[in-house]
Amino acid sequence: MKMYTSSTPLKKKLAYAGMAGVILLSGSFAMMTEVHALSAAKPQATAVQVQNSLITFKTIKSSEPALEASIRIPVFQGLKDIKYQDQLNDIIESHASKDLANMEKEAKEMAIKAKNENFTLHPYTLNINYELTADGKGTLPNLISLEVITEVTTGNSPAQRVDTYNFMDEKEATRVTLEDLFGSNYKQMIDSKIKSDIAADAEKYFAGKDGFQGIDSEQSFYVTGGKAVVVFQEYSIAPGVTGTPEFTFELTDTDTTNPVKTVIDPKSTFKAKNGTVMIPLADVLRSLQFDVKWNKKTKTADISKGAIWTSVTVGKDAYSFGKKAPQKLGAAPVLKKGRVYVPLNFLTDILHAETVKGANGAIEVTLK
Image (cartoon, rainbow, N blue to C red; front, top):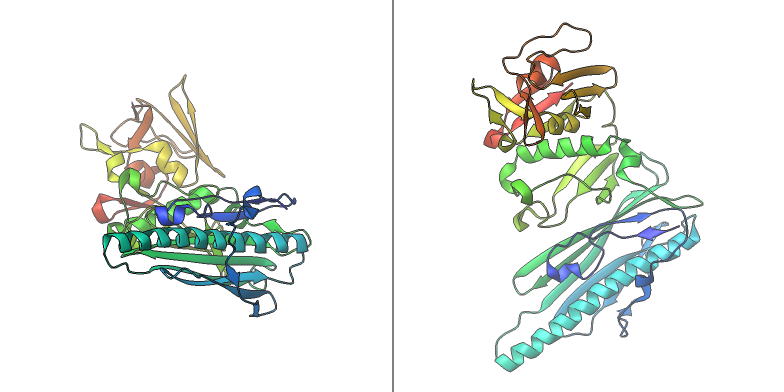
C-alpha cells in the first residue's frame, strides 16, 4: 500500500500543511518519509472517543495562549487492511500536528510583536474537523470516503482547506479515483459539466486564465449518497467569498443515455467576414467526448465517437455526417494560429447538438 499526497495552495497560512489535495492510496506498503517529521514538541492528544464501529476521533489541544485551537481528527478502526489503517491514521494525525505546530509558532511570534509594538492582537484560530461521507455500505460496497476540513484565521483573514480520502476497505486496501468511478472519459465528462455549471453562475468564479482550466489526475473529491462531489480549494478557481467550490455528479453519469454538455467561451470564437461565428473545433469536440485526429498533410480533422464519424478539411465548405452526403454551412473550416475553426452551426446541423447563448455570451452546448 503506497500513499501519496498532492497540494493545491490556498493562502500561505495553509500551504505549509503539504496536504491541500486528495490523498491517493494504492496497493503496496511504502511510507512517506515526511509523515514522521513532526515538531519536537508534540501536542497533547486526548483519549480516543468512540463514534461508531468504523471510525473514532481524538482531540488535540494547544498550550499557546495566542492561538485558539479546536482539533478533532478521525481515527479509523476495524479496517480489513490493518497496515493501511495504521499508516492512514498516522498521516492524518501527523498533518494535523504540523498544522498546529506552525500556527502556534506564528501566533507566538505575532504575540511578541504585538507586545513590543503595543497593539492588540486578536487570537489566531485553528479548527480541524472531519466528515465520514461514505462508510462502505452505500451505493459502492466497501467504498470509504472522508473529508478533513481545516480552517485558520489570522486577524480578520480566514482560510480553509479540504483534504479528501477515498479507498476500498478490502484485504489489501486500494485507492479510488474519479477514473475508477466514471471510466476513461471521466475528465471530458467532468470538465464539460463544471464549465456548464460555472457559466450558469459566472459572477461567482474567476474568468480567463485564473478560472477553471480542467480537473487534474489528483483532483480532490468525496463520495456521498450515490454521488461524487468534486472539490476545489479556496481561491483556486473563485474568489474567497465563494469558499471551496463543489460540483456534484451522480454515479450513474456515465450512462450513455445522459446528455453530454460543454460551454464555449465567447473569447475563443471569432466571426468570419460573412458574419458566421467560428468555434475552435478540437477544444469543443473533445469536451463533448469526441476523438479528434489531425492530418497535417491533408489538413483534415477526423472526428469520431463510438459509431459516429465525420471529418472536416480546411478550405472546404463541405460537411458530412456518417454516410450522408456533404452539405454546406456557409463557411469553410479555417486554420488560425495552429487551430482549426468551424462554423457554430456545425454542432447543430451536423452533430445535431443543441446550443443556447448563456450568461456573458457563453454558448452552452448539449449533445444527446
